[in-house]
Length: 350
Figure (cartoon, rainbow, N blue to C red):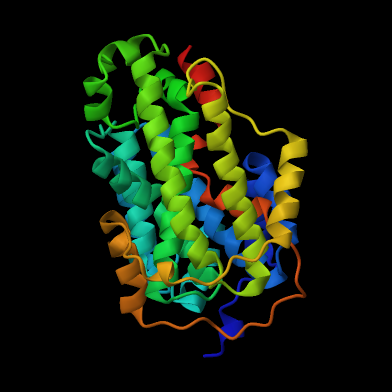
């Protein structure tokens, strides 16, 4: 069967997916128009399903049942027999066109499940495990949509997703605690004299929290530098956008540092002027190729990469539109899905 028959088109289904995004993820929705039409549809369709899944698990009365239903929906999607739901029909087209491994979507749902059950992360290895699911998986899925299926480049994409997630965690320590969640490694907090029960009951900044936050951002910087070597391997039309996302997220981490690693009492925000400067530098800069591309993936991310390589798939031969700078959509797609509507959630528990 020809690829074109599987491709998402501006149909009623895709229109419903975009409407869903425009209502709840407006920055992604409007930024998606910077994409070539085919890639725009694929990214929107994939993200719409992820958004819907996150809503069902995080806001429903029975997260366990919601996850069972989502896995059942994926069963039917991969069988080519989706439910009569717009997001499912569009995702069916996407997974068959791009030969998207089921393991990647399973990993994302597992991350949602961990959030729903209030899983604790006792070590940095546990944090990496979580990051692999909610961010590394998204990075690998986006790479597949870009036509990337080689292990070395996928490892760097997973590095980038993980680094962004670590930055998210460092930026949102106070807000997460208000939601009853701690994503900083518990053993490191306790070693710095932080009472995690007290932190959840009354989120306040302490020197120990600052030390652990700083350490987390140092690990993120290490992963950003590893990811740089994979950006040079991407199709050229995507490199500026990915590089810009990397620069903007790293800038958020630096802003946390400027606040003394205190993200409990204030939120790190990169101002518009700085963002434009970073975007300009991303467009002008070309990352040289390096042997550092051969660095092994984080062990926690390896299963994501193995799933793509084992699938043996190839990118569809699809003509794209002329080059355009693509930035904001990448940022939203790498953004941890759990962060949506954070202000509304905090308001509900107050």
